[in-house]
Structure formats: C-alpha cells, structure tokens
Image (cartoon, rainbow, N blue to C red):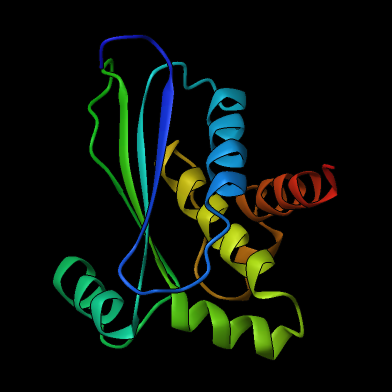
Length: 147
C-alpha cells in the first residue's frame, strides 16, 4: 500500500447520487475506531440484478438483498474487504421506513463494514437486539449528527 493508513473507495455501477465524501470519511473513521490502522475497503453500490447474482453465487440464496460483505484479508495482514450495497433495495427499504435514502445507504455500508471487522448477528427478529445492530445504530446516529 505504500504508506500506512486506511483507504476507502466508493464505487457505483449506476448513475445514482452517492454521498461519496461523507461515506469515505465516515467509514474510514469507523474502521480506525474498530482498530484498523492499515488497509483498503471497497464499497460498491449495485442494482438489483447485480446484488441478486452476488447473493446467489456467493451465498446460494435467491432474490436481491440489501448488503453483502466479503473479507479478503487473512489474520495478521492488512485489512482488505469489499462491501456491496443493493442501491435499489436500499431505496425500497428507505421508502418503507420513511427515512432519507442517504440514511439507509449509510446504515447498510456500516453494517457491511461491521461484518468485515468481525461482528455478526443472529437471523430473524433477534438480530435487532444483537450487539452488532446496537453498534451499527450508535455509529449511524453519531455519523448523522456530525456537522
């Protein structure tokens, strides 16, 4: 990587409005807070077709999902990971929840990053009370309250 630090790359396969600078800064801060001092995170926003294919090919599940995270680093090596956010799925979820799309995009990006640093949650409704979801919502609130 050349110099020590955390690099966050934000990509999109569609022509959607993505708050790239805000996402880069927020996710870099979260990674540092989680003890990541060196590494690369790639965050990519994809459409339903792409997220559906990733979901099927990597998890054997059908249908679109909202976020997928792939750790690419080994223990003892610099952090390296990919997070894919289903933009159209996020837009549907934001509309259902009555919240701004940017909030849901950030929530899903944070969720993916937390998976990459080792957090996990149970399936079903119990996941909403898990330490991972509590951490996610705390980080989201803090990020959204920043000037």
